Every structure is written in C-alpha cells, then in structure tokens.
Amino acid sequence: MTSEDLTHHGDKDTAPGMLDFAVNVWLPAPPRWLRDRLAAALDRLATYPSAADDVSAREAVAARHGRRADEVLVLNGSAEGFALLPNLEPRLAAVVHPSFTEPEVALRNAGVPVHRVLLDGDYVLRPELVPDEADMVVIGNPTNPTSVTHPAELIRKLARPGRLLVVDEAFMDALPGEPETLTGDPDVLVFRSLTKTWALAGLRAGYVLGPKPTLEKLAWDRPQWPVGTLVLEAVQACCEPAAVAEAAAAAEKALEYKDEFVAALKNVPGVEIVVEPSAPFVLIRVPDGRKTRETLRERGIAVRRGETFPGLSVDHVRLAVRPPAETARLLSAWPVEVA
Ligand SMILES: Cc1ncc(COP(=O)(O)O)c(C=O)c1O
Image (cartoon, rainbow, N blue to C red; front, side, top):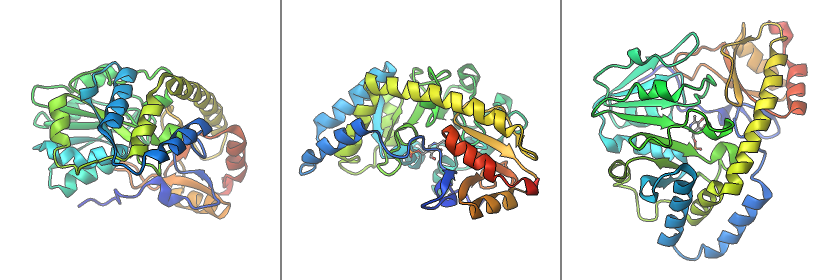
C-alpha cells in the first residue's frame, strides 16, 4: 500500500458553483459542432456499435498520427487503457513520478511490482534512475502535475530490448505543434485523451497507439462492444483535420494565457513557481498549502492539492490555466495573509 491517496483527482477538490482551477479541462462544455455530431449519432443508438464505426474511428486516429488503423485501439478514456496495462504481464513496472496516478493504481491492484522513479528539482527525466530490470516504464508527457515536457529523445533513451515504454500524452495536444510526441514511434504505447481539450470528461473517450500484437494482448479480455457509438463518433470527429486545427489554435491561446498567468503569479507573495510550466497548468509551492487551499475554498475557488502525487507535499498546489477574467478573480482572492 502507499501513503498517498492515489485515487484522489482534481474533481474531488472542486464542487458545483466554484471557480475551478483544480480540474484541467479547457472548455466549460464541448463545442457546438461536436455536440451536433454527438447528437446526430444518437440516431444510431438502437443498434450495437458497428464494426464500420470502429474502423472509421481508428482510421481517423491513424490518419491524424500517420499510423495504421490496426495500431489504434479506441478507449473509454485513457484511464480504461491504464486499467488494462496488467494484461501485458509486466514483471516490474517503473512509474516515473510525480505524475497521474491511475497507471500505478491499476498495476498495484493487479499485483504487479511497481518501482517509483521519483524526480525532483527540475523534474526532468533522469533515465539512470530507471532500474534495468524494469520491463515496463510509464511516464507522462507533458507531465501532470509538474507541467514539464520531457524531450522525446530523452524518453527514447529508456528503450531496451524486452522493455515496453508507456507514455501518457493526455495533454500533448495542449502544446502547439505537439513537440516531443512519441505517437510516431511504432514500438511505444502512447495514450491520448479527448477529455481535456474537448471537455468530454463525462463521455470517457481516448485511444492508444502501439504495435498490433501489444494492443491485442492489452485488449484480450475486454467485453464485446467495448466502447459505445458516441465514443467512436467523438474520437473520429476530434481526429479530423478541422478539429486538430481547432485544438492547435486553442493550444496557442492557452500558451498566451499561461505566460500571463505565470508572470502574475510571480508577483504574488509566498508563491513559488516550482518549474517553468510548459502545459496549461502550473505547479506552485506555498508556505501553508492546506490553509491556502481552505481559504480559497471559502472564497469559492477550487485548486488541486499536491500531496496525493508521489513526491509532492501538502504545500504543492496545481493551478489550471484559465481565461484572464477568471485568473484575475483567483489573484484578487489569493490569501496573501497566508504567505
Ligand atoms: C495526465 C493524465 N492522463 C490521463 C488522464 C485520464 O484521462 P481520460 O479522461 O482520458 O481517462 C488524466 C485525467 O486527469 C490525466 O491528468
């Protein structure tokens, strides 16, 4: 067992009506065109999800990433894919932390030995910390919650014969141009999510790219019709060129907001930017994290606690990047008296 509550996620730090800096979903609701696509797909719900819909979704993903359709598996969110990781029967999984905790939860629950690779300082990957015996290495890129993007070349250094690299790229589409993505590397298992960019947390939609035999082993015990028609429709829609262009524009906007947010945070007494963020969330450290969180909560603002991430403390707080008007509300409510 572990000392942190690994099943804690940002949604538990917020509540209806609060100004939400805890959950990293970019939009308040899916865009109109996507809602229309999903609404039109409702007409197909009388039948089971069709093989044709599955192929169309996988082909759209494949085209988006320059891969083959048989190198794609559509998922009920990348979290479902993490829950399937034990099917690959790793003997020792190295999980790079601090990072999103669901892969470790799934591996531990299945009895897979987990070695934590704990980064600190600049939180950049140090390949020498990964034990040679690890036949699976799990890493997030960009990493939640540190907001660090590891160079793809550095992650590739972890490759060994007989070792599978698992990369959680849930936030990669939030970076303009998706630098450092490993979606083009045929031997790597890369998880992508629709949740963050498209405000689809409630739908559960994502996919994984990887070698066909690995995907077959990953998915061997999934039930018939593992994902629904609406998930297939969403995956197809969000991988089409117009959607990819829209996501890229949103990523540019997020970058702009982030830079303004970081500049403003640097002037807040007591706030330390832990590392210069690359993704649309910022990891900070404050003198009294619990008090800061509670005071903000009393003022109607939710932030993500840090201590449930291995390697972080109660004084770490993760803040989502939001539009300037919301950021201004956060900054004016900031409890400087706690500093
Ligand atoms: C880094 C990271 N990966 C994956 C997920 C889960 O994504 P999905 O909604 O696709 O299951 C999250 C959700 O918070 C996340 O932060």
